[in-house]
Image 1 (cartoon, one colour):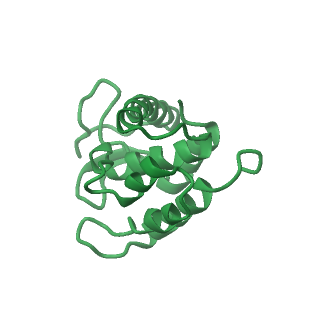
Image 2: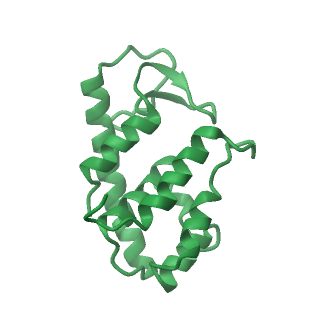
Length: 160
């Protein structure tokens, strides 16, 4: 599967565009729409030149497409039933924000629930639990993002 345009637009809204390098909440050099690496794999540094919105958008789409491919393989390996595009976008957003390494059954209750039943209503609650920064503090931006995930995961495709 690939990220939907609605999801790409949502990431842009949630992340916001920054032309100059900045440090994200974890202290990582970041640029554009929350990207820590350029398309060629080079990490962003605080000394990098500014980029324009078009470059940032291309970087985001490239990152999301690569991550979507990894996620599809990951979910298949765990035996997760096929997801609709809203569900896929939500899990892709989780991986974009938290890292695909967090999406393992030993760390991730909602993944265990997805393996058993992709429509388990408790998934919404579990998605909302990832609202803390790296220091363990509730972060308002993450609360908003988690609420969007929980709502979107169960939104029918024709409504989203």
